[in-house]
Length: 195
Image 1: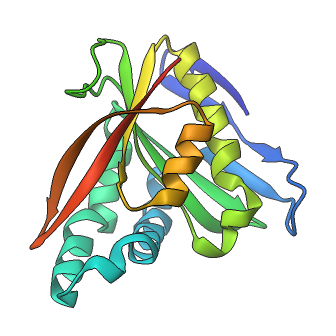
Image 2 (image 1 turned 90 degrees about the horizontal axis):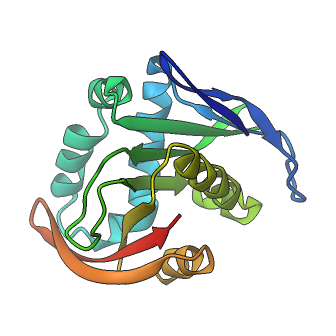
């Protein structure tokens, strides 16, 4: 992935990753406002795949979707200068998205030059293609180029697959915190990586 910082912001050239799996036409690019509808749908779907079974009340899940994954909210998020959204395509189908928040401090990280990997979700059927790994590597490299010294994230403490994924990438556990979604309480692990 080729990236450069310009006067108007971050510019990423689209790159096709050569992945040795079923599909090799993988495109990862910076999301545009018109991608918000894809990201909203991906957000709802991937959130359900990951967290849906934890909700005892379906209405709580629907309310969360409406407040977090509306097209309007995603559009507004894309336009914020401290947010960077990427969208992933496999054979031109949207299959994942990522959100990084620049200059996002954490109570567990003592640095001013820190960013947050806020969301990285890939549809379950595409996880074996390693789309998330290729994207994460490019994002970490870009964070270094932008002079960030650390990146942090939160991961559900029972999501062992994600925890292993981040640990293999050099993230270390630095703390725990709770997060309330409607009536459900989730316990998260905060992880940090020196860049």
